[in-house]
Length: 348
Image (tube, rainbow, N blue to C red; front, side, top):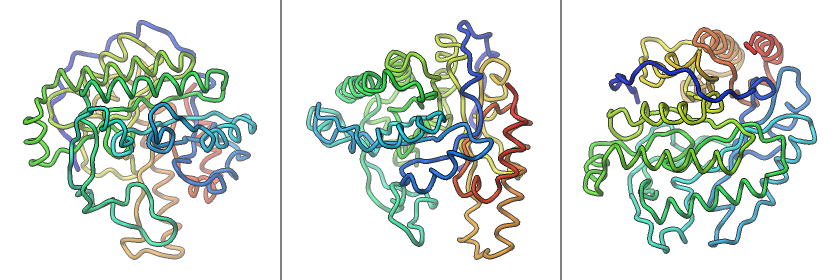
């Protein structure tokens, strides 16, 4: 969905807090929820800085106060032993455990209409293959949700306090499927948000609390905001970014997750935000898949198109001021020469 809402926030300020990002920036392979065998071969590959790992709240704390970090520990330690860095996403949204609602958090129920969330062929069903399903997430500014989430983030920080491999933590909480700031925003969703008392200040306040919670819990790590439209085009994202940069300076990174080699005439408000802040703090991009299988492209033609998109995606990101990228394990494996070349081109 295109996002081209108004961007009238003041010019980006100079950061008030310096942060040494030199040992953090680079190319991260998207590990996500995949088994280590999908990404572990890249740990010895030239040009790879680290792995971007994800874990769901409902898997880590299925029962209140009973947290199980064991599965995530295995992945984090494997990356650390290889001398690489971790970008960590802890997911709330549709991954919020049921006990949070039992404690009084209000629910927001919606139908997933994202066509990219259709089931894919082959392999296990993925977390975001929910097209047509009715899903639930907590109302972002609900106090029962926010207090439970802050406690969980604090516990995660305490558990990984001695793990220096964790270089970035993606600020999450008021999300839907992923770390992106997007929430359900179909016309009927917007009506329901209004009925629940939505105001920009309430959503901005929730994001401020989550940024601060991560900053306290992971004092040595960069804080990453994955920019995307929230609910309305009412400058919530701009105000959240302004708060984060003013409070945490160069420690707050800004990221967009849908960069292609050819973006056509696509115009996005978050790209304008990145442009405004590119000389203030570190910005990065996650590549978007071409989804060629759905277009019936196979064989050598598919390889050629994937390589072309991968190369141009790097060039476009660098043109836009990127200092780090998140890339797929398949691209890293199939095009190691491009990985090595563009890792060397990244500004330090």
